[in-house]
Image 1: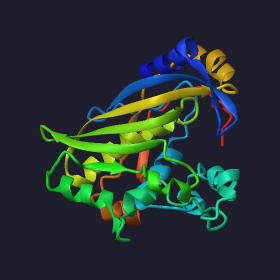
Image 2 (image 1 turned 120 degrees about the horizontal axis):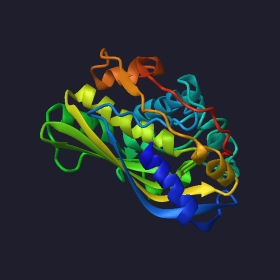
Image 3 (image 1 turned 90 degrees about the horizontal axis):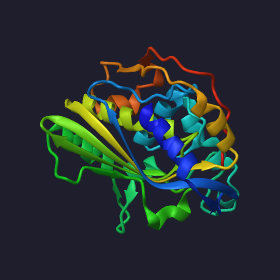
Length: 283
């Protein structure tokens, strides 16, 4: 909690106002933030100064790992975060590449599982990484990236947390995740949970021990209509102890993740939190 609260306070104290063209709102912004999560010792980075909906964050991650491209697919597994971007983003609604209601286009997991080559074939980045890590191989290029400038026009949103690099050192698996843009009041805890769970899950299915996850954010911001709630409500609350996180031990392969795993295969123990805060969402 301390590193999360420190970042929030830093934005409030040091942030500069930036006009955001996409949303039409101003953001109080800082550049460069670095967080880390101790997956090895199960220090789950779940926000306690407000209620955090961690199950939806994990459901979204599962959708990415499976390569989903439709908001209805995400809803089916317990995640509603793509409804607005798929159906209320006017630029995407006007885009001829949109295939209809709930279509997200070639974003996030689509790029991770089916990156299109110039020859017209696809590359499954994640499959290569899982295969290598399962054999204890780290070629210093175990990189999963969703950031494909050549296909931005084919999706409803550029990826925010866009690249994940896996590394093996001393028999442990590490993760470094890069994020270009972060809505700190709403999005950051989703992203924190996903970094932690991605490392824990990948370690479990590849037979490696997890180390730490490193989370690097370029542009961290608070929207102007979120600032009062952050400054005068959330930052006034005392945090509770971090909970612990558990994954169903029956999840043993990538195929399990692709086929039968649900959010019910993940659990959190000891989560004590303050009431939820209804932060506005910027589409």
